[in-house]
Image (tube, rainbow, N blue to C red; front, side, top):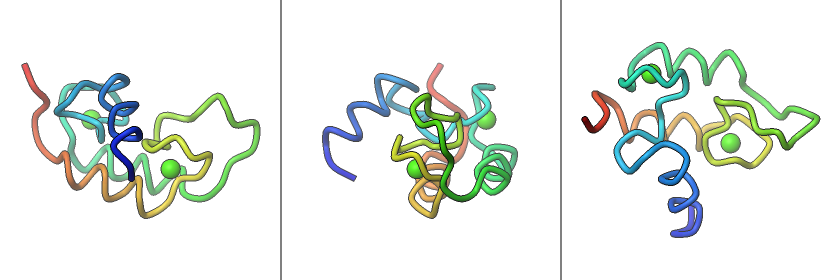
Length: 76
Ligand SMILES: [Ca+2]
Ligand SMILES: [Ca+2]
């Protein structure tokens, strides 16, 4: 992931919570499961699906790592 990718993520989710797939203020097992449920490439992209956190038209280990890296409560 490049600095530019990170900037895109931060503009989408805020600096603390790029892994918050379901936008509930917390990165937890539900976000992890959402990534796993959407695993693999998807067509008609863009639009990007919520689980595609690095916006590459595929849900893969990089998205999983983003969830793990931002695990826990989001910024207030
Ligand atoms: Ca969440
Ligand atoms: Ca992805």
